[in-house]
Image 1 (tube, rainbow, N blue to C red):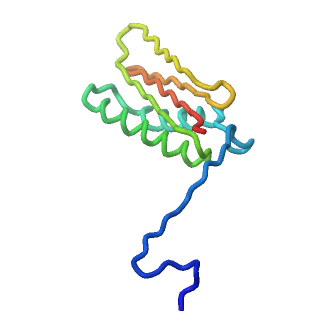
Image 2: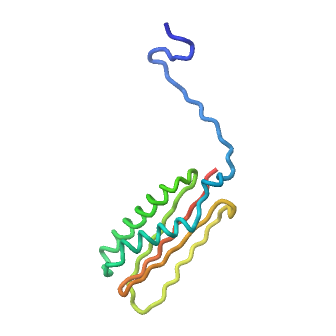
Image 3: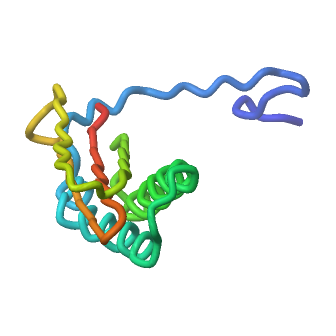
Length: 134
């Protein structure tokens, strides 16, 4: 005989999820730029230090580097943060490049980090954004 808490055979189970109303992350769940910069620096340097610029390969490198950075940042256990990674690679040709970004966010919880890498044939810029979702 089934109790009242158990569903009858074939009965649909409905889970009720209530909002948490968490407006700020806990002290151990904050996006720290210093941690993500170390990750970006490690991934980009390891991946590109022995490479020479190739236009076709650079397209694949950008995707591989950004995916690897995002996966490493997710291991930091910072829940409720959306992680956005933007990687740009270009050829060194005696020219200057300036990469800028503008965002509308909550300065108390959201942050970003940036790392630039150069070698004789290429330059790379990796930006990681952490945006807290309420």
